[in-house]
Image 1 (tube, rainbow, N blue to C red):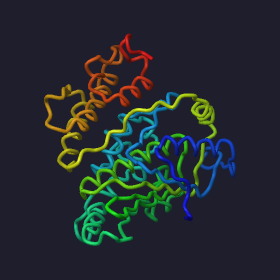
Image 2 (cartoon, rainbow, N blue to C red):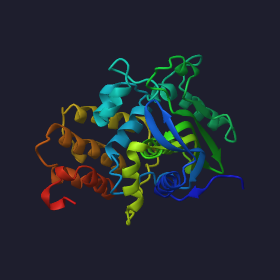
Image 3 (cartoon, rainbow, N blue to C red):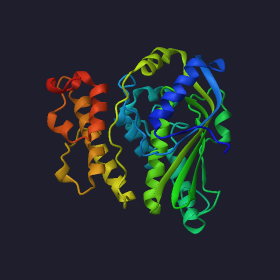
Length: 332
């Protein structure tokens, strides 16, 4: 079979990509002031896209941002208020200080558009319902006009996303012009597989494999020390991967997004008894409650009660990311 390597989980793929580019780069590049080592035409498949989170202490992944970004896309938003709250570096990509363009995939994928008033996402799901074997269920992201301004700081890295429904399983493929292997690869794969899983729930089918194809996969020179620490890590932690519940709907996402806004603005505090949602989504909201405490009360440790609301893998990631904000008894 003429395909790229297949990995069981994203962690396996992530470590393989970092190792290959670090040890055997094809090129050295310098674009837009960034020097990088690069491999071109990189492809891989993840057999279980639900296993989208790498538990690597040296990586210190921001699992709160990962969920916020996926929800930001699904909500069709382009505002800085939400996403830059979880990743301040994104403010540097905005030309008006209020919105993002290329980075904001949500409006292109999930907002209604002409001629039928449906979103690209709705169109491809409708197509899959009527023609399950279709090869046309693709959603375009990068637009030709993004290259009209050579100084545009925010050109979409993703070209397209494609769904394929085969043998009762929803597969997904991402096509990217470029991908930062250290930073962007993790966030992009998390968000895209989250969208894939949500689409599978809406269609009432199982989640299939996830394919990732990139023209330029690269490691920026400034990130080489971090990559070395990740590759040198002796222990890869393993936690159960929790699947999105069957029957998940847009109404569930609306509830989660409502709580995200209230917690981001410090207008409320979360407790599980206040929401009628599956445990999966209550654990997602709990991440935003923990982040609320970290953001709005910088001189206080996160409460043990809030940490206890997290699923084990999320709690471990939070402890790695913000060790100085943990109660003394749980500080790693």
